[in-house]
Image 1 (cartoon, rainbow, N blue to C red):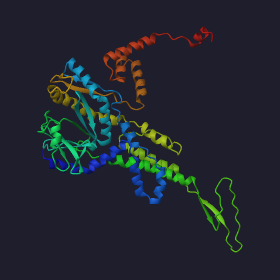
Image 2: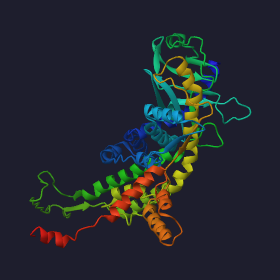
Image 3: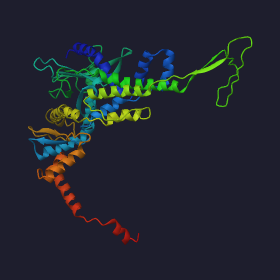
Image 4: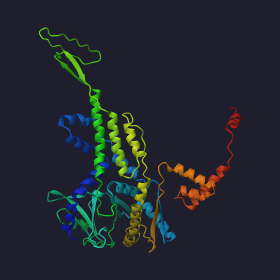
Length: 464
């Protein structure tokens, strides 16, 4: 591989990496420095020192991403197509070892945060594992003239750095279908590290790129980050902090005096100030106070309006929160996200996440496990059938307030004779197997035949 070509690509993506680093940092909880930096730019030094003690670092980015990333809230159902019962058992084993629902939930979060992510299967002490690589730790290249949306190179960093000639240099790992190389940002091949990994020649033994890349964009290989994700994540807390700063000076009035000898004045609830006019002057002493006033309600309305517009651009239908006031500001803004309907957004996500996970498992099943098994790298050396494929089915995306309505609709259909009880249960619980439905129907039948004692009769029998 041409290391200089790889480094040129990385340098060309510096802005993308910078944005990804900020998004990742805020999502990991480090929001405050970005608010402080923006407020320091907006305000004078003296005003900023007063205002920074009232900063409200409410991290809405975490709440928004978590709200959007619910495809794995209910475990999806994975099945083997064109396989055998042994393939089914092997799939269950890999699901457990990969902890697939845990990491696919993380990938769902990164999909909504960055619009792309990278899945990597690997072996750790004989156990197959998987990891999700965030957008600030990898990049992709395509030299495919037929399909430029297909990566031909994957470069990862994992944030690893080493000392070279007294200074730190960034280490990268690059993969193509045939090659593997470790290099640094000085165009130097890290042969010692490759030797330590037992791959001095830099051969990719899998014959395919050992990653699955999922990209939300249908037009560019590397999607642009949504500029609003950083800006709005910082802006809303700044507006709330401005409100806190204004309230601070609205509560504490500014006292002033004109022609007053203030040397012996005492400030306190029981203090009494006596002023005498200067007989040699025609000026009278005067004391007053400035009490700043701000329209809290209108400021809150501004904040909530921008929040609602932001949520709407994300495909969320903001929940009703009623009229905002200083008393319910925090809970109101939180409820706006909590009560948002993400049904349509989640339905749109499924096509990407489903395709990505199925591609990941098919990569593992037919390209990586045979190599791991032959090299005795894993404790379970069983192979999947050559034509087998993994299929995933997610829970039905029911609107936020729709399950109760769905029950009522199904009840009406059953009463009208348009649907059977079994089909109604299947529609309400699409991930249930036939045996689970049989068990549920049996439980319902048993409970419906149990006679319930009259509470008053029972009370009298007990001498109550």
